[in-house]
Image (cartoon, rainbow, N blue to C red; front, side, top):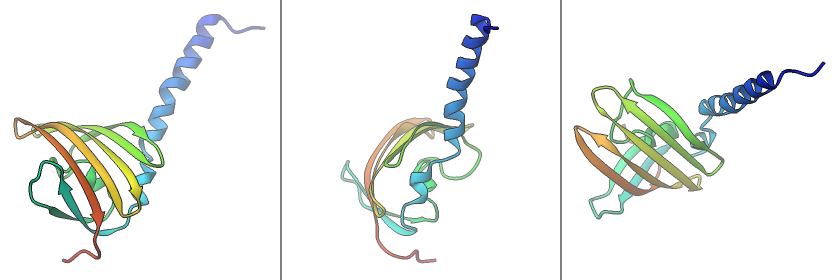
Length: 132
C-alpha cells in the first residue's frame, strides 16, 4: 500500500531538517588545526595579536570570548566552517574560517559587540607553543 503524499512530504522535510542538525556538532576541521600559539595579522593594518589555541573553536567568537552563546553551524566542510552565534547581552556574530594548512587559516567575522558593529578579517598562523 502506497503512503499518502503528505506522509512522504513530511518524511522528506524531517530528513532535510535533520541533516544540518547532525552536522552542527562536528566542526571537525577546527580539530585538525595545530594547537599552541597563533599570530593573527589583521587586514585593516592594526597590530598583530596572539592567541593560545587549545581547540580551533577559539577562532569562532574572537569578539565574544567565553561561554553563554548559542551557535548555528552554516557550513561545515573539511576546509571551511561558518558559524553564526548570539551572545545574550553581549551581541552576535558570523564567522567563517578557511583552512589553508594545519597551521594557517583565513578568518572573516562580522557582527555587533559592545553595541557597535565590527568587521574582522585576519590571517592566523601557528607560531609555536603557548606561553603560560
